[in-house]
Length: 256
Image 1 (cartoon, one colour):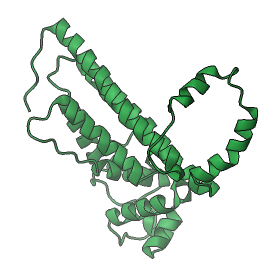
Image 2: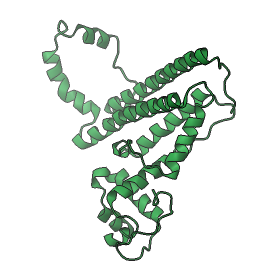
Image 3: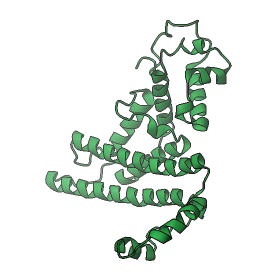
Image 4: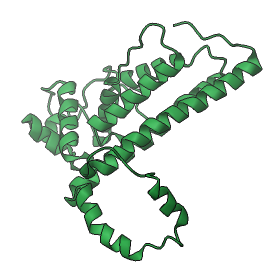
């Protein structure tokens, strides 16, 4: 916590620090973006910065601390600004899309633990902004927290599907066109419409058609599913708010 807020003394271990903490975090994020979180190590960060690994220990005592700093830094990228007169729904949508965008820029982000998220300045600023977006709607504090948790859980889960769609193609060296080409002959051989009548009829109706080129088929599906799901989640929250207003008698849209 002290490290996140810049109020701690450098770690006692190692020589006197000669780097800015921001440089270390930026280097770690660059490595994770390019090589994945599993490739990240204190030594790789040191090599990236052209210093000895012990230099990093002048700031950090463990990799876990570095991951917390990375989490808070990415949260700071989501500095959403709301247009004048934006409704709570528009605000939540902007927040959701900003988080989605962070996951696409940093495919490793969903792999960091969101339980016990580091309570750094960027994380708390984002929490304050999100909580303010649903204030004055007739919800209790607990209900407001649940609404935000719902949005976060949905976006994180949907983003993971999109990230996986990209990573699996890279890891297998097969784009979606090649993958379909490999599995289709076997699928056609074993397919039995009598066994899978619902799948067969929905496929005929284009249930899984995507407009993107075939090599990005699964990513296109993840994106369209995200768009559909986000709207439905917001619909559900709106219905919940309307019900809560009916109970409390508060029916006006909050100002701001």
